[in-house]
Image (tube, rainbow, N blue to C red):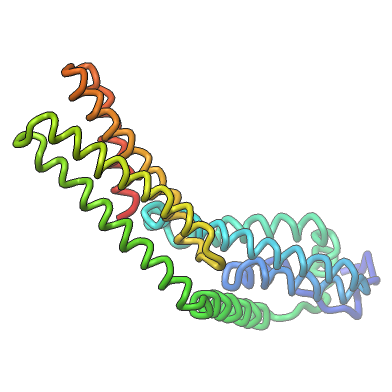
Length: 260
């Protein structure tokens, strides 16, 4: 074969396929490292460092986003889909920035690092990611959970006290029911809303608890709305509020399901 380009004759690169393999195993971080090495071979170290930084940011975005997706949704996504997506994106990026150089290098039968070496770097990247995830989980101070759990204990007590109303609907007089709504149910759910706001201000609150709080806040607001509707229904002695009550109770059921 006639050599069309001798500029990379004495250089060694990671091929697109090798970078794709490493990415699939170890995520964008592995891709960033290998791209950095290719830039380094081309004596473009600054671009390589930029690529590595971008890969770190991309890794944080990818895994941060996955962390925020509810488990009920994640369980329905095949395990290979997400790695396949970001691997495909990385493959296209490599093709755009180094595709021509790597193709010419290959056509001239110049050397590449082995796929096994790239896969090994992917495994190292995976180990780093797993270590960071576990460190993040276990380094969260116990006081954060203790404080949160104490607040949730009061939240649960308020919930139980207010929901006793449903046991009394068909057995108590309207005056007693109104008294229970005004003095127990509504105040308890207003307090629960304040509890959620307080826990949101806990320093270092894990993301899963932040997401849980969003649902609990919605749940509390719906409960407060339901008891307000019950109050109007009793005061005005009309069924006009039943449609709204059914809607609210359906929304409550949806929130409860998402919390399980």
